[in-house]
View 1 (cartoon, rainbow, N blue to C red):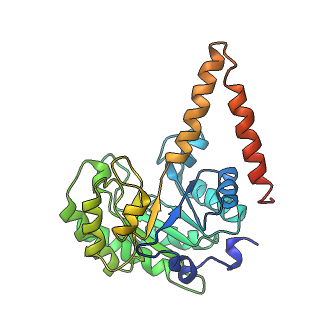
View 2 (view 1 turned 180 degrees about the horizontal axis):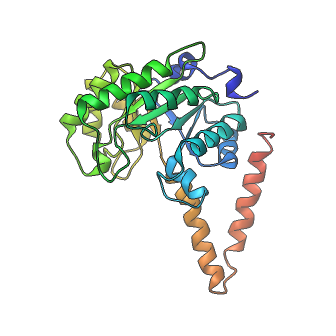
Length: 276
């Protein structure tokens, strides 16, 4: 049974996993294999990663487009019984109607959640405040419509684009929550005191992106965080290990092979727990 069958998917059950002080640890899968591995490890839900998925396809973040992203999301949904939240970047549209169309299409593939960001994808451009709120309102209406609503995460991207303005970020998150977002998220914040400010300022669950500078999950839980995700970090660690071994192989070394065999044994053991 997949999440699209309704066992764990949907706004009520997935959102219930978001508990302030007991955060949902949400690993970002980049392909079917990583999704099944994370499910076998006991994670309670999964997310996609735009950068990891793009790397798996041999491209850069932001280059996959809507159709490929939705097909990738559908593959992750089908891979396990866990609820999946998809990174939909800026909704693949500037206008609210286009964002709503993307969210409606995402609901149709059986996702439990989607995220929409307020960066346009053109350099460091952030949508103006009022327009960004209109986009989230349209996304929320589409996310919550019909018999199979999904959890909408609204992202304020200031800190990822050189705008370390906590006041503006909080104002955006508050407005996104009022517009109907179920979860809010300001990726790039690397200071636990700022995390506490965000949590105190909104009345919906807060997701935090794990980045260098933040404390362990236990301290984020104490700060009231309801969800912790890792973006493309796990994907790029995997690719980094492959690059390091390939570089050794290119130089004629084979001393990396024992580690490979050990890793293969562990992966195969886990995959036996999640039949295709």
